Length: 150
Image (cartoon, rainbow, N blue to C red):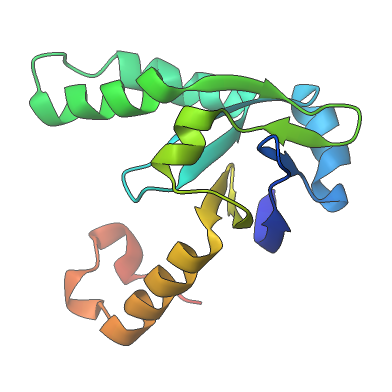
């Protein structure tokens, strides 16, 4: 389970050191093999390879004549890049993906259960403040969330 928020720094080559608390689990689950891609919110998504392969199978089965589905395929599959934990527990984020998410130095790695989101730290803080300021969204909850109790 990938959870928690981690403030990290990209090195000069664009490598991200995955926090040690995740490394052993990632080694067991996917031999350190992962896939990084873009998200519509201009952050990056980092999946263990087996979890990504399941999502990719679903994406390629979407109807190609459905324009929103096609756009999602183009973004997620088109930008998907294999990466692997190196001997120091780092992954290299390719320049086009770093550019897409405006990643320079200070980043935030946020566990989302089956994946991580990688955000530019300033962008994350701005977005988080916007979401919190927006207040409750009770009237717009999908049916799956109406009965969720936290």
